[in-house]
Length: 221
Image (cartoon, rainbow, N blue to C red; front, side, top):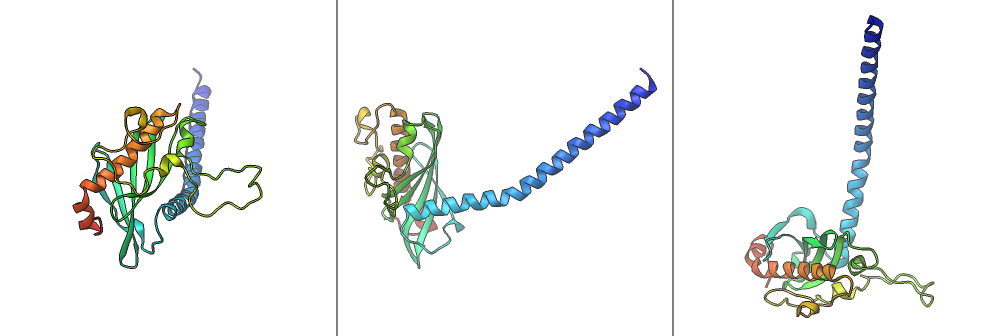
């Protein structure tokens, strides 16, 4: 190989290294510029979700969290919502690994007595048109209400709302197909089971974790 060829290879190597360094710097700058807006948007979505499933509260609900162990061994994250000094509810997050297409994350508002107030599925990868529909909350538009404003409050979902205000059986809710009482949708049996399981694990975790919650926040009966 000629000396000039060696020089060309060195120059090419330096050039590629500079390009790589410049690309890394650009990506770092872009990431730094976008990370804060992304985090702010995530916090805003979470705050909106909490307002939907809990009574009105005025404390910093994110200031403190405890973790309860559910019968299935899940770690249920719990935060307390207060109005003044009174606890008006809890926010509980359950991560179910057994959805049809992966993880299903459920955020539940829990009443001070340990029963469910309202449920939102905050993350799911279920089949569109089948399991995904069981996890959604949205008002349906028809020709009869096309011009009407969207109603205030949480859109109904019979698969999520069926647990509101109820005390779970000792072993939790199961769907009617499995001999239980929880509703399920044909063609979305696995998702139906995942929803019932998540609701059960939240309520049962509160039932067995009263002392932990009381030590941290007070209020579970």
